[in-house]
Image 1 (cartoon, rainbow, N blue to C red):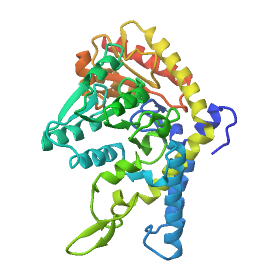
Image 2 (cartoon, one colour; image 1 turned 180 degrees about the vertical axis):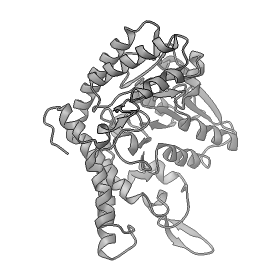
Image 3 (cartoon, rainbow, N blue to C red; image 1 turned 90 degrees about the vertical axis):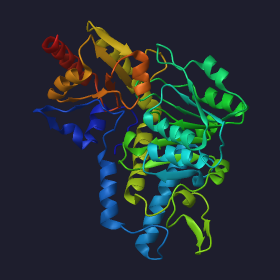
Image 4 (cartoon, rainbow, N blue to C red; image 1 turned 60 degrees about the vertical axis):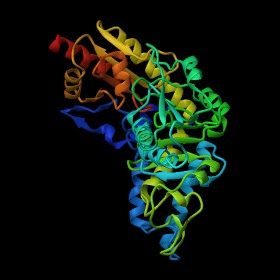
Length: 409
Protein backbone atom coordinates (compact mmCIF):
# COMPACT_ATOMS: atom_id res chain seq x y z
CA UNK A 1 0.00 0.00 0.00
CA UNK A 2 1.43 3.32 -1.07
CA UNK A 3 1.01 6.62 0.70
CA UNK A 4 -0.63 8.58 -2.09
CA UNK A 5 -0.29 12.26 -1.27
CA UNK A 6 -1.61 12.80 -4.79
CA UNK A 7 -3.78 10.47 -6.82
CA UNK A 8 -1.60 8.18 -8.94
CA UNK A 9 -3.77 5.79 -10.95
CA UNK A 10 -0.81 3.74 -12.20
CA UNK A 11 0.45 3.17 -8.68
CA UNK A 12 -3.03 2.35 -7.37
CA UNK A 13 -3.74 -0.19 -10.09
CA UNK A 14 -0.52 -1.99 -9.17
CA UNK A 15 -2.07 -2.66 -5.75
CA UNK A 16 -4.78 -4.88 -7.31
CA UNK A 17 -3.31 -8.15 -8.69
CA UNK A 18 -6.51 -9.21 -10.47
CA UNK A 19 -6.39 -6.17 -12.76
CA UNK A 20 -3.51 -7.85 -14.59
CA UNK A 21 -5.77 -10.75 -15.57
CA UNK A 22 -6.79 -11.73 -19.09
CA UNK A 23 -10.39 -12.57 -19.99
CA UNK A 24 -11.04 -14.22 -23.35
CA UNK A 25 -7.49 -13.33 -24.28
CA UNK A 26 -8.03 -9.63 -23.57
CA UNK A 27 -7.03 -7.39 -20.69
CA UNK A 28 -9.64 -7.47 -17.92
CA UNK A 29 -11.73 -4.33 -17.58
CA UNK A 30 -13.78 -4.53 -14.39
CA UNK A 31 -16.94 -2.43 -14.18
CA UNK A 32 -19.00 -4.51 -11.71
CA UNK A 33 -17.89 -2.71 -8.58
CA UNK A 34 -21.39 -2.17 -7.19
CA UNK A 35 -21.65 -5.96 -6.85
CA UNK A 36 -18.15 -6.61 -5.51
CA UNK A 37 -15.02 -4.48 -5.53
CA UNK A 38 -11.64 -6.03 -6.18
CA UNK A 39 -9.18 -6.57 -3.34
CA UNK A 40 -5.80 -4.84 -2.92
CA UNK A 41 -2.76 -6.96 -2.17
CA UNK A 42 -2.37 -5.47 1.30
CA UNK A 43 -5.80 -6.89 2.24
CA UNK A 44 -5.02 -10.28 0.68
CA UNK A 45 -1.69 -10.35 2.53
CA UNK A 46 -3.43 -9.66 5.85
CA UNK A 47 -5.55 -12.80 5.43
CA UNK A 48 -2.48 -14.90 4.67
CA UNK A 49 -0.68 -13.33 7.62
CA UNK A 50 -3.53 -14.15 9.99
CA UNK A 51 -3.54 -17.84 9.10
CA UNK A 52 0.25 -17.94 9.09
CA UNK A 53 0.86 -16.20 12.41
CA UNK A 54 -2.30 -15.60 14.48
CA UNK A 55 -4.81 -18.37 13.79
CA UNK A 56 -6.72 -18.88 17.04
CA UNK A 57 -10.19 -18.28 18.40
CA UNK A 58 -10.83 -14.91 19.99
CA UNK A 59 -12.05 -13.76 23.42
CA UNK A 60 -11.89 -17.27 24.90
CA UNK A 61 -8.25 -18.14 25.40
CA UNK A 62 -5.55 -17.02 27.80
CA UNK A 63 -2.77 -18.16 25.46
CA UNK A 64 -0.67 -15.87 23.31
CA UNK A 65 -2.25 -16.54 19.90
CA UNK A 66 -5.77 -16.04 21.21
CA UNK A 67 -4.80 -12.77 22.86
CA UNK A 68 -3.10 -11.44 19.72
CA UNK A 69 -5.99 -12.49 17.47
CA UNK A 70 -8.43 -10.82 19.86
CA UNK A 71 -6.39 -7.61 19.82
CA UNK A 72 -6.41 -7.55 16.00
CA UNK A 73 -10.13 -8.32 15.81
CA UNK A 74 -11.11 -5.67 18.35
CA UNK A 75 -8.65 -3.29 16.73
CA UNK A 76 -10.70 -3.58 13.53
CA UNK A 77 -13.83 -2.70 15.51
CA UNK A 78 -12.15 0.48 16.74
CA UNK A 79 -11.19 1.34 13.14
CA UNK A 80 -14.83 1.18 12.08
CA UNK A 81 -15.92 3.18 15.12
CA UNK A 82 -13.52 5.93 14.07
CA UNK A 83 -14.35 5.63 10.37
CA UNK A 84 -18.11 6.02 10.96
CA UNK A 85 -17.66 8.42 13.91
CA UNK A 86 -19.68 6.16 16.20
CA UNK A 87 -19.84 7.11 19.87
CA UNK A 88 -18.61 3.75 21.18
CA UNK A 89 -16.85 0.75 19.63
CA UNK A 90 -19.56 -1.45 21.20
CA UNK A 91 -22.00 0.13 18.72
CA UNK A 92 -20.17 -1.69 15.89
CA UNK A 93 -21.44 -5.24 15.30
CA UNK A 94 -19.72 -7.59 12.87
CA UNK A 95 -21.99 -9.71 10.68
CA UNK A 96 -21.64 -11.67 7.44
CA UNK A 97 -22.82 -8.77 5.26
CA UNK A 98 -25.41 -6.03 4.81
CA UNK A 99 -28.15 -8.63 4.33
CA UNK A 100 -27.31 -10.28 7.64
CA UNK A 101 -27.20 -6.86 9.35
CA UNK A 102 -30.63 -5.87 8.04
CA UNK A 103 -32.13 -9.24 9.01
CA UNK A 104 -30.68 -8.86 12.50
CA UNK A 105 -32.44 -5.51 12.95
CA UNK A 106 -35.71 -6.52 11.26
CA UNK A 107 -35.89 -9.71 13.33
CA UNK A 108 -35.32 -7.68 16.50
CA UNK A 109 -38.21 -5.37 15.71
CA UNK A 110 -40.61 -8.32 15.52
CA UNK A 111 -40.67 -8.21 19.31
CA UNK A 112 -40.99 -4.41 19.46
CA UNK A 113 -43.82 -3.81 16.99
CA UNK A 114 -47.47 -4.85 16.97
CA UNK A 115 -50.22 -5.38 14.43
CA UNK A 116 -51.18 -2.11 12.74
CA UNK A 117 -47.82 -0.41 13.28
CA UNK A 118 -46.45 1.18 10.11
CA UNK A 119 -43.02 0.90 8.54
CA UNK A 120 -41.75 2.84 5.54
CA UNK A 121 -39.45 1.68 2.74
CA UNK A 122 -38.29 3.50 -0.39
CA UNK A 123 -38.96 2.46 -3.98
CA UNK A 124 -35.19 2.45 -4.61
CA UNK A 125 -34.28 -0.42 -2.30
CA UNK A 126 -32.24 -3.53 -2.90
CA UNK A 127 -34.26 -6.69 -2.22
CA UNK A 128 -32.25 -7.24 0.98
CA UNK A 129 -33.83 -4.09 2.43
CA UNK A 130 -37.34 -5.10 1.39
CA UNK A 131 -37.81 -8.82 1.96
CA UNK A 132 -36.79 -9.00 5.66
CA UNK A 133 -39.29 -6.25 6.46
CA UNK A 134 -42.03 -7.95 4.43
CA UNK A 135 -41.37 -11.06 6.52
CA UNK A 136 -41.76 -8.93 9.65
CA UNK A 137 -45.11 -7.59 8.38
CA UNK A 138 -46.36 -11.10 7.64
CA UNK A 139 -45.46 -12.29 11.13
CA UNK A 140 -46.99 -9.46 13.18
CA UNK A 141 -49.44 -7.67 10.88
CA UNK A 142 -47.46 -4.46 10.48
CA UNK A 143 -48.19 -2.27 7.45
CA UNK A 144 -45.50 -1.37 4.90
CA UNK A 145 -45.71 1.92 3.02
CA UNK A 146 -43.50 2.92 0.07
CA UNK A 147 -41.85 6.27 -0.69
CA UNK A 148 -42.46 6.76 -4.45
CA UNK A 149 -39.80 7.71 -7.00
CA UNK A 150 -39.81 9.92 -10.09
CA UNK A 151 -38.48 9.43 -13.63
CA UNK A 152 -35.08 10.87 -12.68
CA UNK A 153 -34.65 8.11 -10.11
CA UNK A 154 -35.16 10.37 -7.10
CA UNK A 155 -37.38 9.79 -4.09
CA UNK A 156 -40.31 12.21 -3.88
CA UNK A 157 -39.64 13.77 -0.48
CA UNK A 158 -42.98 15.55 -0.23
CA UNK A 159 -44.74 12.18 -0.59
CA UNK A 160 -42.50 10.72 2.11
CA UNK A 161 -43.62 13.46 4.49
CA UNK A 162 -47.25 12.50 3.83
CA UNK A 163 -46.58 8.88 4.76
CA UNK A 164 -45.20 9.71 8.21
CA UNK A 165 -47.52 9.54 11.20
CA UNK A 166 -47.55 8.63 14.86
CA UNK A 167 -48.05 5.03 13.72
CA UNK A 168 -44.68 5.04 11.90
CA UNK A 169 -42.18 2.95 13.85
CA UNK A 170 -39.34 2.21 11.42
CA UNK A 171 -38.05 3.79 8.20
CA UNK A 172 -35.46 1.96 6.07
CA UNK A 173 -33.79 3.55 3.06
CA UNK A 174 -30.56 3.08 1.15
CA UNK A 175 -27.95 5.82 1.13
CA UNK A 176 -27.13 5.14 -2.54
CA UNK A 177 -29.22 3.12 -5.00
CA UNK A 178 -27.29 0.11 -6.26
CA UNK A 179 -29.30 0.12 -9.51
CA UNK A 180 -29.26 3.85 -10.35
CA UNK A 181 -26.51 5.45 -8.27
CA UNK A 182 -28.94 7.99 -6.76
CA UNK A 183 -27.71 9.51 -3.49
CA UNK A 184 -30.73 9.79 -1.24
CA UNK A 185 -31.22 12.72 1.20
CA UNK A 186 -30.85 10.42 4.19
CA UNK A 187 -30.07 13.12 6.74
CA UNK A 188 -33.37 14.84 5.96
CA UNK A 189 -35.21 11.50 5.85
CA UNK A 190 -33.85 10.62 9.30
CA UNK A 191 -34.70 14.03 10.76
CA UNK A 192 -38.32 13.83 9.58
CA UNK A 193 -38.74 10.28 10.89
CA UNK A 194 -37.38 11.29 14.29
CA UNK A 195 -40.08 13.97 14.56
CA UNK A 196 -42.51 11.04 14.86
CA UNK A 197 -40.28 8.94 17.10
CA UNK A 198 -39.48 6.38 14.37
CA UNK A 199 -36.18 4.52 14.13
CA UNK A 200 -34.25 4.70 10.85
CA UNK A 201 -32.02 2.10 9.23
CA UNK A 202 -29.76 3.24 6.39
CA UNK A 203 -28.37 0.68 3.95
CA UNK A 204 -24.93 2.13 3.27
CA UNK A 205 -23.53 -0.72 1.16
CA UNK A 206 -23.16 1.51 -1.91
CA UNK A 207 -22.12 4.63 0.00
CA UNK A 208 -19.17 3.46 2.08
CA UNK A 209 -16.84 2.82 -0.93
CA UNK A 210 -17.37 6.31 -2.36
CA UNK A 211 -17.64 9.03 0.27
CA UNK A 212 -17.34 9.80 3.97
CA UNK A 213 -20.14 8.70 6.30
CA UNK A 214 -20.65 10.24 9.75
CA UNK A 215 -23.38 8.42 11.67
CA UNK A 216 -23.46 11.09 14.39
CA UNK A 217 -24.02 13.84 11.84
CA UNK A 218 -26.70 11.78 10.07
CA UNK A 219 -28.22 10.83 13.42
CA UNK A 220 -28.83 7.35 11.99
CA UNK A 221 -30.21 4.73 14.37
CA UNK A 222 -28.73 1.91 12.28
CA UNK A 223 -26.27 1.94 9.40
CA UNK A 224 -25.12 -1.18 7.51
CA UNK A 225 -22.44 -2.06 4.99
CA UNK A 226 -20.58 -4.97 3.37
CA UNK A 227 -16.79 -5.27 3.33
CA UNK A 228 -16.69 -6.81 -0.14
CA UNK A 229 -18.09 -3.57 -1.54
CA UNK A 230 -15.30 -1.44 -0.05
CA UNK A 231 -12.27 -3.51 -1.11
CA UNK A 232 -12.41 -6.05 1.71
CA UNK A 233 -13.18 -9.77 1.69
CA UNK A 234 -16.57 -11.40 1.23
CA UNK A 235 -18.46 -12.68 4.26
CA UNK A 236 -18.03 -9.61 6.50
CA UNK A 237 -20.67 -7.02 7.27
CA UNK A 238 -20.85 -3.97 9.49
CA UNK A 239 -23.85 -3.00 11.58
CA UNK A 240 -23.72 0.29 13.42
CA UNK A 241 -26.51 0.78 15.91
CA UNK A 242 -27.13 3.41 18.52
CA UNK A 243 -26.55 1.87 21.92
CA UNK A 244 -30.12 2.60 23.05
CA UNK A 245 -31.53 0.60 20.13
CA UNK A 246 -29.07 -2.28 20.34
CA UNK A 247 -29.93 -2.64 24.02
CA UNK A 248 -33.64 -2.87 23.11
CA UNK A 249 -33.26 -5.48 20.38
CA UNK A 250 -33.17 -9.15 21.42
CA UNK A 251 -30.29 -11.34 20.19
CA UNK A 252 -30.66 -12.57 16.63
CA UNK A 253 -28.80 -15.85 17.19
CA UNK A 254 -27.99 -17.93 20.23
CA UNK A 255 -24.76 -19.75 20.99
CA UNK A 256 -21.30 -19.24 22.32
CA UNK A 257 -19.83 -15.82 23.10
CA UNK A 258 -23.20 -13.98 23.19
CA UNK A 259 -24.04 -15.19 26.69
CA UNK A 260 -23.37 -13.95 30.19
CA UNK A 261 -24.55 -17.02 32.11
CA UNK A 262 -26.24 -20.23 30.97
CA UNK A 263 -28.24 -22.65 33.10
CA UNK A 264 -30.92 -25.08 32.01
CA UNK A 265 -33.45 -22.80 33.67
CA UNK A 266 -32.36 -19.44 32.21
CA UNK A 267 -29.75 -17.72 30.04
CA UNK A 268 -28.63 -14.13 30.41
CA UNK A 269 -26.96 -12.33 27.53
CA UNK A 270 -23.61 -10.65 27.19
CA UNK A 271 -23.17 -6.91 26.91
CA UNK A 272 -22.70 -5.17 23.58
CA UNK A 273 -21.28 -5.96 21.11
CA UNK A 274 -20.97 -9.65 22.05
CA UNK A 275 -24.75 -9.94 22.44
CA UNK A 276 -25.08 -10.03 18.64
CA UNK A 277 -21.95 -11.99 17.72
CA UNK A 278 -22.77 -15.61 18.47
CA UNK A 279 -20.25 -18.30 17.60
CA UNK A 280 -16.83 -18.06 16.02
CA UNK A 281 -16.81 -15.09 13.63
CA UNK A 282 -14.93 -14.57 10.38
CA UNK A 283 -11.86 -13.44 12.30
CA UNK A 284 -9.44 -13.11 9.40
CA UNK A 285 -12.11 -11.37 7.31
CA UNK A 286 -12.89 -8.80 10.00
CA UNK A 287 -9.20 -8.02 10.46
CA UNK A 288 -8.76 -7.74 6.68
CA UNK A 289 -11.80 -5.45 6.47
CA UNK A 290 -10.08 -3.10 8.87
CA UNK A 291 -7.06 -3.13 6.57
CA UNK A 292 -9.36 -2.28 3.64
CA UNK A 293 -10.64 0.75 5.55
CA UNK A 294 -7.03 1.77 6.20
CA UNK A 295 -6.33 1.44 2.48
CA UNK A 296 -9.14 3.70 1.26
CA UNK A 297 -8.47 6.22 4.04
CA UNK A 298 -4.83 6.29 2.97
CA UNK A 299 -5.95 7.41 -0.49
CA UNK A 300 -8.64 9.65 1.01
CA UNK A 301 -12.36 9.44 0.38
CA UNK A 302 -12.53 13.06 -0.79
CA UNK A 303 -9.87 12.21 -3.39
CA UNK A 304 -11.75 9.04 -4.36
CA UNK A 305 -15.05 10.89 -4.76
CA UNK A 306 -13.51 13.59 -6.94
CA UNK A 307 -11.85 11.05 -9.24
CA UNK A 308 -14.91 8.80 -9.49
CA UNK A 309 -17.19 11.76 -10.21
CA UNK A 310 -14.93 12.71 -13.12
CA UNK A 311 -15.13 9.14 -14.43
CA UNK A 312 -18.91 9.15 -14.06
CA UNK A 313 -19.22 12.38 -16.04
CA UNK A 314 -16.91 11.09 -18.77
CA UNK A 315 -18.70 7.75 -19.07
CA UNK A 316 -22.13 9.40 -19.17
CA UNK A 317 -21.08 11.77 -21.95
CA UNK A 318 -19.50 8.96 -23.99
CA UNK A 319 -22.52 6.68 -23.63
CA UNK A 320 -24.94 9.40 -24.73
CA UNK A 321 -22.96 9.80 -27.96
CA UNK A 322 -24.22 6.35 -28.97
CA UNK A 323 -27.56 6.57 -30.77
CA UNK A 324 -30.27 4.62 -28.95
CA UNK A 325 -28.71 4.67 -25.46
CA UNK A 326 -31.18 5.35 -22.65
CA UNK A 327 -29.84 6.00 -19.16
CA UNK A 328 -32.08 5.32 -16.14
CA UNK A 329 -31.52 7.56 -13.14
CA UNK A 330 -30.60 11.04 -14.32
CA UNK A 331 -30.46 12.98 -11.09
CA UNK A 332 -27.46 15.25 -10.59
CA UNK A 333 -27.02 13.81 -7.11
CA UNK A 334 -25.61 10.40 -7.93
CA UNK A 335 -22.37 8.46 -7.76
CA UNK A 336 -20.45 5.83 -9.70
CA UNK A 337 -23.35 3.91 -11.33
CA UNK A 338 -24.85 4.17 -14.80
CA UNK A 339 -27.78 1.90 -15.67
CA UNK A 340 -28.69 1.88 -19.35
CA UNK A 341 -30.22 0.04 -22.28
CA UNK A 342 -29.60 0.25 -26.01
CA UNK A 343 -32.73 0.50 -28.14
CA UNK A 344 -34.81 -2.67 -28.05
CA UNK A 345 -31.79 -4.99 -27.77
CA UNK A 346 -31.94 -7.27 -24.74
CA UNK A 347 -29.50 -6.26 -22.02
CA UNK A 348 -28.20 -9.81 -21.62
CA UNK A 349 -27.26 -10.08 -25.30
CA UNK A 350 -25.27 -6.86 -25.13
CA UNK A 351 -23.64 -7.95 -21.87
CA UNK A 352 -22.51 -11.23 -23.44
CA UNK A 353 -20.73 -9.45 -26.28
CA UNK A 354 -19.16 -6.97 -23.85
CA UNK A 355 -17.93 -9.91 -21.75
CA UNK A 356 -16.37 -11.48 -24.83
CA UNK A 357 -14.27 -8.31 -25.09
CA UNK A 358 -12.93 -8.92 -21.56
CA UNK A 359 -15.14 -6.30 -19.93
CA UNK A 360 -17.18 -7.10 -16.82
CA UNK A 361 -20.52 -5.30 -16.45
CA UNK A 362 -23.69 -6.41 -14.72
CA UNK A 363 -26.92 -7.20 -16.55
CA UNK A 364 -30.36 -7.89 -15.08
CA UNK A 365 -32.59 -6.33 -12.44
CA UNK A 366 -29.73 -5.86 -9.92
CA UNK A 367 -31.88 -7.17 -7.05
CA UNK A 368 -34.03 -4.07 -7.48
CA UNK A 369 -37.07 -5.34 -9.35
CA UNK A 370 -39.43 -2.58 -8.12
CA UNK A 371 -37.22 -0.05 -9.94
CA UNK A 372 -37.35 -2.07 -13.14
CA UNK A 373 -41.13 -2.39 -12.79
CA UNK A 374 -41.39 1.38 -12.45
CA UNK A 375 -39.55 1.89 -15.74
CA UNK A 376 -41.46 -1.07 -17.30
CA UNK A 377 -38.27 -2.88 -18.30
CA UNK A 378 -36.94 -6.35 -17.42
CA UNK A 379 -33.47 -5.06 -16.58
CA UNK A 380 -30.52 -2.90 -17.59
CA UNK A 381 -26.81 -2.99 -18.27
CA UNK A 382 -25.06 -1.55 -15.24
CA UNK A 383 -21.68 0.13 -15.34
CA UNK A 384 -20.33 0.70 -11.82
CA UNK A 385 -17.07 2.52 -11.27
CA UNK A 386 -14.16 2.44 -8.85
CA UNK A 387 -11.12 4.63 -8.29
CA UNK A 388 -8.95 2.02 -10.04
CA UNK A 389 -10.89 2.41 -13.29
CA UNK A 390 -9.68 4.70 -16.09
CA UNK A 391 -11.03 6.75 -18.97
CA UNK A 392 -9.20 4.38 -21.32
CA UNK A 393 -11.22 1.48 -19.90
CA UNK A 394 -14.41 3.46 -20.48
CA UNK A 395 -13.32 3.97 -24.09
CA UNK A 396 -12.91 0.19 -24.40
CA UNK A 397 -16.45 -0.28 -23.09
CA UNK A 398 -17.83 2.23 -25.57
CA UNK A 399 -16.12 0.35 -28.42
CA UNK A 400 -17.60 -2.93 -27.17
CA UNK A 401 -21.10 -1.43 -27.02
CA UNK A 402 -20.77 -0.11 -30.58
CA UNK A 403 -19.62 -3.58 -31.68
CA UNK A 404 -22.62 -5.16 -29.93
CA UNK A 405 -24.97 -2.70 -31.60
CA UNK A 406 -23.61 -3.60 -35.06
CA UNK A 407 -23.88 -7.32 -34.36
CA UNK A 408 -27.37 -7.26 -32.81
CA UNK A 409 -29.23 -4.52 -34.68
